[in-house]
Amino acid sequence: MLSKRIIPCLDVKNGQVVKGVKFQGHEVVGGILELAQLYSEAGADELVFYEISASVEKRLLDVNWVSNIAKHIDIPFCVAGGIKSVADAAKVLEQGADKISINSPAIARPQLIKELHDEFGKQCVVVGIDSFYDEATGDYLVYQLTGDPNASSRTRYKTQQWVEMVQELGAGEIVLNCMNQDGVRKGYDNAQLSLIRRMCDIPLIASGGAGCMQDFADVFKQSQVDGALAASVFHKNIIDIGELKTYLNEQQVAVRLCN
Amino acid sequence: MIAIINTGCANINSVRFAFERLGVTPEVITDPAQLAQFDRAILPGVGHAKVAMDRLKQAGWCQAIAEYDKPLMGICLGMQLLCEHTDEGDVLCLGMIPGNVSLLEVGELTSPHMGWNNLCEVKAHPLTRGLSAQQQVYFVHSFAHTPNEATLAQGEYGNAFSAIVAQDNYAGMQFHPERSAKVGTALLQNFIDWQLP
Image (cartoon, rainbow over all chains, first blue to last red; front, top):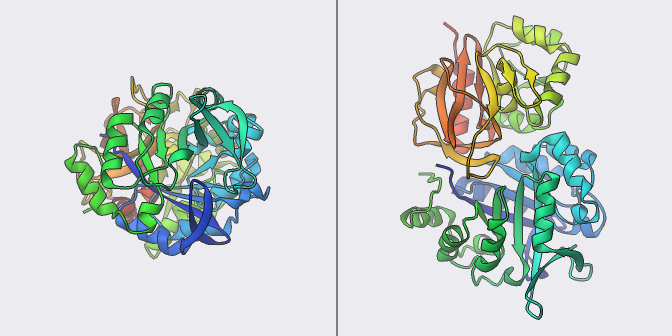
């Protein structure tokens, strides 16, 4: 049976892993390689490396990190940050990444999703979506350039509309970052994730809001997502990945146990 | 010495790094004439079957692979290319492993089949030594080989499919052993240790 994936995310800025709250006020939480290896050995099912300042600074992430991490981990590895073309993606994949994740560049030029799909295959193309819940209108809205609070802005898309579009263009997986929940550790946004799950035929990864082990059980059971991404609960040792998996297994969630 | 055939596909380094973690330094080769001098070889691959098969043909790999008589293992798309035919792009493949590759019928499940899944129906073979059916490996694929006499281990996602195959000196793994943690590492070690009868 296909396991639900537990995915630690390394948000990287200036060569160090950082973590903000609701995408602001980033603080340094650790070294890239140390954390990558630690999580890989602890039983993480996949690792995401995301250079948050790359898109904002209109450049490709530093690909040297990709090969450094790829050398040291034996789990799948997805890389994001300023990938704007097939040539950019090829550079990242050549260094040992397994998948590439695009977000703001896809909003700027949706055709990029199709180009990456045609060159590398659907399974290689992850689309990250930063979705903000507007309480005034009850709409879910897509944001871009969220790596920097000064550059972050609303796009022309509502989340449901963008989810449909990226699937049609050939995305192989969607990571839905629920911005209102990000870094506050009050649980995943199951209302939004369930809504998107019903219209999403490709793997869906929940992101934003994990605070305790039950939040993971809830998101898998209530929202039927394929994976749950989290950062601060792992970086700050609030949750141990091995214990989380034992707990999820007891909760009848299919997981890969590593011992 | 292990050769990694450079198919122009993108995941060559992750395969190379996995062998390096096992203390073996493979050589990435781009010229089919080099293949015969290596003790074993890996045919990696991600991407579209038609693109990859065209590249193999243009670079002259088909004959070199067919004439190779030492252990050669395809990984993921590399395994599919070793089979007879794939429905992905309706392409005739290398034909070293009997059987065809077709789209996984996943029904209500999400496609591609992406993530960690267990193996089942594991047959005894040097390549499956130490492997048990409960163990999980990392899959990323939409197409798969239909189980037949070459199948050493199966996976199941909607339908049963071949996860590990072998025929004579040719073998294939549909999942990514280089990204399958300790289980994958053990399987790559099995490939390094595989002696043909």
